[in-house]
Length: 101
Image (cartoon, rainbow, N blue to C red; front, side):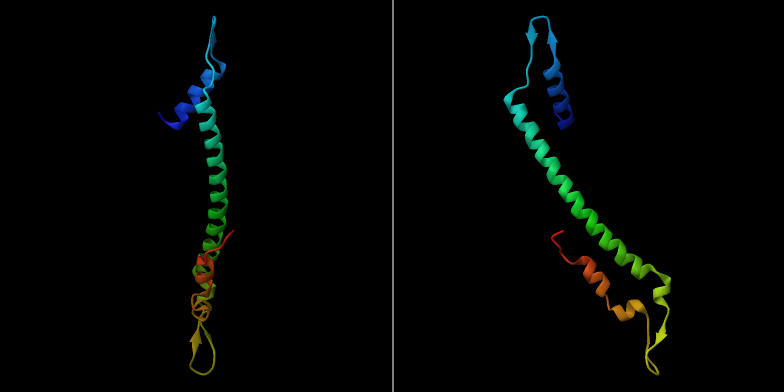
């Protein structure tokens, strides 16, 4: 049985009543529902962390993708550099840092 099917079954039990027969939610189902709620909270936290990580990656990619950053400029008589070249990958390394968001 899938998680969705189990939830539907529990919902039916909660409200099912015909004649003199009543069916109630079992204790095991209550425990399972609590575990699912805790799992949802963990997943929400994970999504928040992944969203922040994605934003860092996006900013780094935007820096390297910006055509204006690839315009060469002189530093001295024979040294030509671009913003990404001058950056030496620092923007990418910062985006890839492991953080405790």
